[in-house]
Amino acid sequence: MDNLRFNSASSNVKDYYEVSESRKQVLDHIMEALIAPNINMIGVCGKDDDNIASLLQRVIRRGWRDNLFGMIVMIRIGENPDIRRIQEEIAHEIGCSFQRQVKQDKKTRCCGFNYFEFHSANTKKFDTENAQQLFDKIRSVPKILFILRDVRSRLDLGKVGIPFGVDHRGCKLIFISESDDILSNHMNAQCTFIF
Image 1 (cartoon, rainbow, N blue to C red):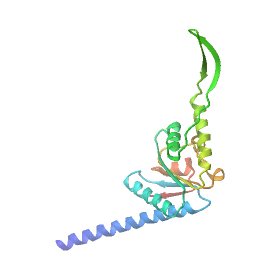
Image 2 (cartoon, rainbow, N blue to C red):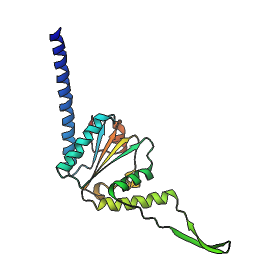
Image 3 (cartoon, rainbow, N blue to C red):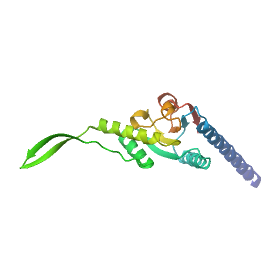
């Protein structure tokens, strides 16, 4: 009976090391993709759980250790991407404060006092201004990594203000999603790793 338990335990240990070795290979492949000059969008397909969190911690540690990035930003996207929330979280992480330009429309008189009515810009205009300010700030960072977690649908990186490709060769993105379709067809990941 003890011998059986020993074999069972050794089998579990073997399975553990095989899984660990497999995860290490995924980590190594992700790091190779981050170093490759022609790859800027990487997909990791898997359930966003403790295993993914552990993988991302290792990516971040190696990114800092190997001096691959001057800045690393991790943001959770979610089911219905809220562009303004995403912009504000990124701005907070990279130290960008949004400058608003408020337009004075006309001088009005009320109760004996003069005051100006201010044109309240609509949400789209603010989002566009935020995107431009983020774009400019991110471009000023030579090497930056964005980790976008829990991507469930297409996210327009231009609307958010994240430059990539020819706009900023030093900007790399890792998308985490449970759907390979979203990574490959909607986010256009150049390489995808199953985790």
